[in-house]
Amino acid sequence: MRVAYSVETVRAAERALMARVPEGALMQRAAAGLAAACANALGTGGGVYAARVVVLTGSGDNGGDALYAGARLARRGAGVTAVLLAPQKAHRGGLAALRAAGGRAVTPEDVDAVALVHRADLVLDGIVGIGGKGGLRPGAVPLAEAAHASRAVVVAVDLPSGVDADTGEVRGAAVRADMTVTFGTYKPGLLVDPAAEHAGALRLVDIGLGPDLDGTPPALEALQHADVAALLPVPDAESDKYRRGVVGVVAGSERYPGAAVLAVAGALRAGAGAVRYVGPGAQAVLARFPETLVSAGPPHKAGRVQAWVVGPGLGDGPEARRAVDDVLASDVPVLVDADGLRLLDRAAVRSRTAGTVLTPHAGEAAALLGVAREEVEAARLDHVRRLADAFGATALLKGSTTLVASPEPGVPVRVNPTGTSWLATAGSGDVLSGITGSLLAAGLAPRDAASVGAYLHGLSARVAAGPVGAPVAAHDVAAALPGAWRDIRS
Image 1 (cartoon, one colour):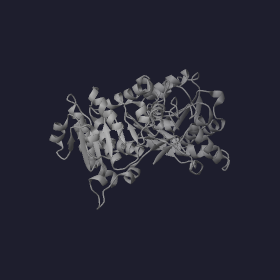
Image 2 (image 1 turned 45 degrees about the vertical axis):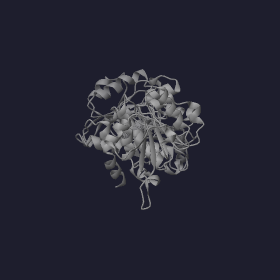
Image 3 (image 1 turned 135 degrees about the vertical axis):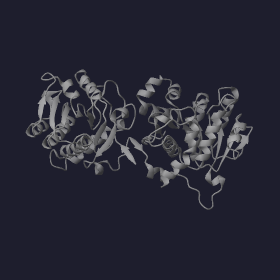
Image 4 (image 1 turned 135 degrees about the horizontal axis):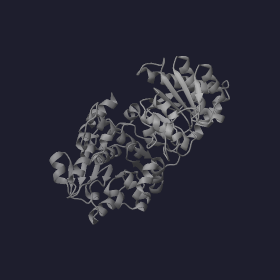
């Protein structure tokens, strides 16, 4: 599992480790890993020797890491120039090492720094460290823009300057990196959009923080194949449909019968022992999936289920509202999506004793919280936590980086690493609802069901899109689920 820790936790671990190792040892470990990553990046071009490297350097230890890495590259034959954005506060040891290795240091007043960046083969972003708040200062903005517009490989030191390490927010201009080399552990902002969009490929350099982080809950988790494989429900010789899980689906309407079909498809392909469908889309559902058990409703008369999915394509009429209320009154886990989110009663959700999963996109989350959509998109981590707390439910916030938050305090938010832009297609959320509902019915806890559901959903889209990527429809995502499942288990 990939984990990310807050800035406060990272700094406490660094202080503890620095008390046990020689002075400067951590910075040298970081610089060595950073220089190696830069050398690998340059190797795809023409190699380190004679490469033109520009180090954008601010103050403090982040600038020191960048300068020491620049010194290592200079000793290997690169032409290294450090642009000092805060000359009086530049790291003295790193600056001396760079000059001793044959590198040079300039200020924006000395040279045309923008032109220097445009001519570089590699730009090392050491402007601001993990404690930075807000966007870049005005003097750094032209250099960040030049780096982005250039043909250089842009490598961020620990995280791109101008993004918030703890929240993933970007409150102004920020560096856009091709690669971020981070030290000791991941930071939440590297895994959560919009900041993650600035980070590029991630490289983690081990500087020895592990023992000082052990036992401390991370701020963020990202499941990987092995974690998901351990959670996938696999039938045994004694399994029947109820042991595998029966999920009820209340979805679709005369206007949107396809939503019912897609939600049922997701549930069946994700391993449900049976699916009970309630709603006006029965004819369309049976035409595609004759194994579905259909009912005229209401939901509580449909038969035994171990979880409910309610909302996709349901509409907003009185019958839809009654169906949502009926499902929320049940004593089994419930997933609420799409139209169901507009019809639910917050008090009814908070009073439930069984688990509840809410799966909004940014616009729906904004409506539930009474804020603007732009606020949710700018601060996704904060708002998914707020949503879980406000409703006392597990919240799955869909988007470029899907997040899952538990209502229990102190539990790390999970970020899904398998998402792909090909999922931006009508009906894909309906498939996700069915997948996650099936996992709830199989007995997974709400946080695990939502996390595994998002992982399977994203991976299925990648399988459907193929290795180079191609447009996919929502039904393609459902059809690719068995392949994604096999990939995880193998």
